[in-house]
Image (cartoon, rainbow, N blue to C red; front, side, top):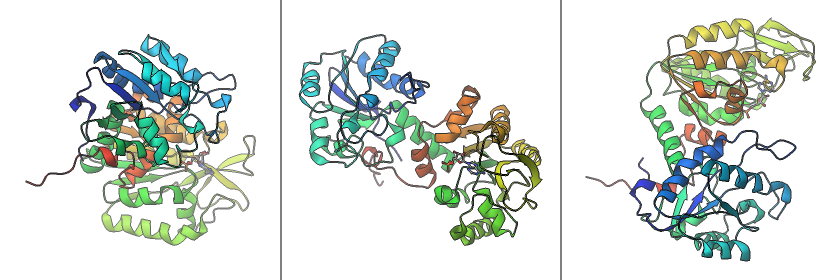
Length: 401
Ligand code: AMP
């Protein structure tokens, strides 16, 4: 799959609209606690500025209800952008209202305008045509650099692309990098290739698991989803998270793995707790001996050692989903240990966004991974084998020889 890329565009002196993903986490004082998503967009913005473009930036931030809400203003992002770009960044008071339209019109070469939170307009998530057209009217060129929302058919991601022809729209550097990384991973990974799949439920990762099976050599399962598999094997899982309606599906996945020769690993021991509570009484038990009424909240020490053995000689690691309830210190040990093994390995290591990226950053291992995706949901859809609605319009048609 080839994308129209920013490098192929004639950008000189043009008005460029860049859809970014500035949906960064903030604390109770509105301070940005992790600006990786903003830093990731700087290459594309600077590339345009170096070609004397005027640049209009747009992003969503949090989940306002389609109307202005100062809590979700992009003002903190504007300040961080000014620091990173070392130049003024204007912020419009609306998205496509009088202020935004006037500021976009007055924008000169080398100047940057940030539109207020796209989700202050209900048309954004509804992929409203009129709203898309208003956004498009501000610029000559459209760039999508928002990987994290490219799995959503929203106005600034999908609708807007219909107002630009193939010579005036493209993927930014970040989007291109993310798409290419996952394409290579799925097509020609260095082997052995192991997928570590965790998180709360099988249902959230079912399609990804099914699509990964024919591509990987080994699968390591952790997190809440492990218990549906363990129950299918006939183990007593106590009060652990389980999806009874997916027991047969879990069985099919294990059968398919066997048929394909994929080594499918499940936790051999568990940290079980009396209740779902950070202070709950807990103990390590084998997966076959979870006491009635207790919940498995992390993988146990024997599983950690087993998974370390498996990770010893692999060449590619894809990790999506924590091994336990990592938000509670008592149940974060399995995920933390696995993060260290992955980081220390000589393999190409890919972390699939969302909670796993958060976990890796919390323990300061983000620089040690080969690639951390900026999008949890979007990367999962790529692993499911889907083409993302925000990426599809930027794919070059295949020309038959
Ligand atoms: P997901 O969004 O499906 O990747 O799931 C991430 C969430 O799974 C995190 O918030 C974890 O706390 C949760 N999780 C991981 N292991 C367990 C478990 N054993 N029981 C309940 N929740 C879990």
